[in-house]
Length: 210
Image (cartoon, rainbow, N blue to C red; front, side):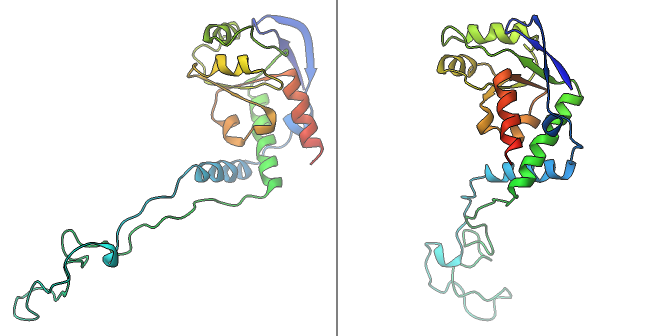
């Protein structure tokens, strides 16, 4: 598949990039994408929720009611889950939500997601660039040039300097990531995927080595 290369101003450079079918032209596997996204989102959960059980509540252990004759349930402590302010029965405890997904499945999911972006025309290739200074307006000019002002987009920029990364972080519709840190959620959680030429080569190299 051949895709046109644009400058950071959004103008055609007259060049095209040949995308590898092993990365951008496979038969997508929806289940692999589902598992990878589910695993990523699960890993974002802290899992620190906790409620106090009967043995952890600081209340008196004095018997509040006589054993029989009240017409109610027997309870020997105000810590009982049956009493307001008592401990919670079978409450949540801290635990990890991590879901294990094999590396090959994660790679298949990324290639499937990249293929979907390419087939749907939501993949934009730009020539390698860096902005002059760490100012939001510098990267906003790039976004406007590519006609992505109101479009949620992920920029995969290989070799982006600190100025470029800093200039993009205050634009709410834009997220910047390097190819080595790319995950399935970065690809799926956007409308347009923008790659510079260096990122295309890096992705194709990474997947060809797996």
